[in-house]
Structures are given as structure tokens and as C-alpha cells.
Image (cartoon, chains in turn blue, yellow):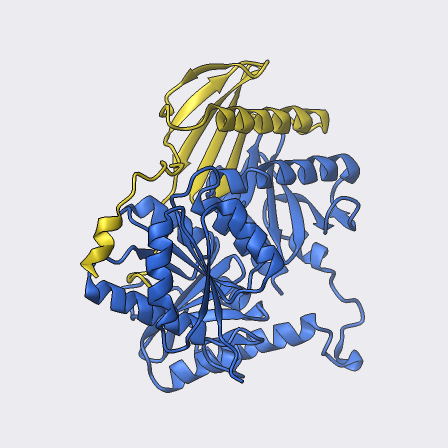
Length: 353
Length: 102
């Protein structure tokens, strides 16, 4: 028997819930629709059952939709999420996408808008969610980029990996630009290609996007594949150099960097430092600071903490996270704030390999 | 489907990310604020508590800082130390958005 997809619909208005519930059950995939009238109830239902899709109104009392979506994106990164609102507000839209929602939609008010909304929901339900990149089954992201380039396509690929999103601009079969967090160009492309799974969607081409990538797609994909192989230890032993350069050594060569400290996992996780006399105290401060400001994420609904920068007369410092590793990087005080930001992008790009 | 328009509701206000600044003294008392009154005071206090703790713990770790910048995708918090107190600026950010709704 064919399995019906399950949708959880969250809105504090019971009339709207009933109405949307009726409409959604008429979708071709015949989804099973369940409803919740509060954010707390929504989270409780997600704990007890598996849903393919959450449609969440943003305006709800006590715990608003952004807070719910922030928690859901972190706890259930594979779940499709749709933010629904009646407010025409660019800040809300920006914040919802920053949280990693799949779709942000103004509440439909006309037949045409409703039809478009239903088509999008059906499309989200139809996307394969198990393994690989959702949207095209059994294809890696490299395959998808190659297909786009070989067919001389012009498009923007929006790739999501849990709360992280990236974009790749393709124009007439050539890679034009890429963006992943603060990274741009080749560094962003390598970062996106290092993600092991997620979802993607094709957006209309943006031919006016400034060009930051000048290498051929073949060369870039090859370099990326080699870097990934090496990071997985796929290089044969005889091919390894006699004295391999440790990742921290590589990072410590970045201009203006005074020290680097990496921390794995939660408190008590492995801690490795280079160029730091007292890594324990610094590590403790870094962990506590990251924890403090992460604890504000859900209340602010401003998306996941990206970076903390500290500036002082003796040294500057950056705290960031990547691939489940927390970084605490110290910089020479002679660097400007902009230089610190640029250099930190380099550090994270190097670490991506 | 114009029927849906009938169901407009007097919904609770959604927490908006504010643009403005506030100052706190060394005890954490908010002295001045240009933040809208709709922004919860409890959240202002929580932000200032975390910021002051980050400054003081950094000094204890022999890393005296004069400025902290906390970056979220939709909000930038900038804090500057003021002789034991702190001035904190909140600035919402509109990030790059998809061209269409999908």
C-alpha cells in the first residue's frame, strides 16, 4: 500500500487550520494532515511522530513561528519546513530563510495564489528525502553541477544542508559565483561540495551576478574531488609526503594569525591549539561565549549564531564553528576589523579541506 | 478562495528584530535605550548579561577586549565597553534572498 505523506500544520486560528487542512488533503499525494494550535504543541507532536512537512504560521502566541522553526531546523534538519504569514515584511522573509526554511509564503488570498501554494507543497512532498541531494535521486551534487554545465544551462542552484544554505550561479554552462555563509567564490564552492547531503532547488538565472570564479568547472570539480578524497584518507600511503602538514600548521600560516584553537563537540571535547600558551583558559572562555550566544538563537529568531568577533588593544579574536568544530582564532592587533573578517574566511576555507 | 481573506485574525505581534542601542552599567542596569518598547525588556537584559559576562570572562582569561561583534544571519549585535558598563547596538540584517517566493 502506498504510504501517505504526513503534514503538520501549525496555526493558532482553528478556522484556518480546518480550512487549510481540507485543502491540503485534496493534494494528489493525499497527505495525512494533522494540526497544532501552539508552538509547544507543535514541538510535542514532532517528538512523538514523524512528519515529512511542517507548515507553520509565523504569528502565534507565546512561542512564535520563527522560534518553532529555529528549533525544528536544528532538531529535524531533514524535515521540510514552510513558513506561512499574512505580513508583507522583508525582514521576516529574510529571517525565515536565514533559519533554513524551504519555503516562505504569504498566505494565499486568491484562487491562483492557492493553486501555486498547493503546487509548491505537492512538489516539496514529492522530493525524495532519503540520502543524497533531494530533488534528483541517486545523483551527487557534482553530477548535478556537471549536468548543468554540460547542457550549457544558466541557473542558480540553491543548496541546503540542515540550517546551512549555499548558492551556485551558473551562466551558459560556466560557474560564475558561489556563496556559502561568509564564503564566496571558489572557497564557497569547495565548502558546498564538501556537504554530504541535503536538498537543492533550481532558481532562475541571475546573469548580472558578479563573476568570482574563473577556473573551468572540470578543473574545480576535479580539485574538489581530490581534496575530498584526501580528507577521507583515500590517498594511497606511498603517495603521502614523508612529513604531512597538519591542518593547524596550515591554518597558522594565514597572514596576521597569532594562534588557533580547535574544539570538538561539547564541554570536555578534544581541544587542539597552536601558538597559544594557555589553551585551557582561552578554550573555556571560547566555549562559554559560544554557548551563551547560541542560547539566544531561539529567543531572537535571528538564525544560528555565525561568528563572534572580539577586538582589543593586545589582540583580536574570532569564534566560529564549522563541521562540528569550534574555532578560536587570535589575530594581531594591527589588523583592521575588515582584515580580520577576510582572514577568517581563509581559515574556514582552508579547514573545509 | 477569496474566502480565506475572511479569516483575518487579530494575531499576536511577532517579535521584530529592533534597530537601536542601549547602555547598561557595571551592575547590569539598563540606563538608556533607543530600542522600541515592543522589544521585550527580558531579552534586553539577557543580551546585556551575556555580553557583560563575555567581556569580564575574556579579561579573566587575559584577553582584554574593547568591542564584541556577535553575528547572526539576521541580526548583528555590536557591544563596546564603557568603563565597566557597555553600550550595545542591535542592527537587523536583510540577507540575500531568492528572487521568487520558492
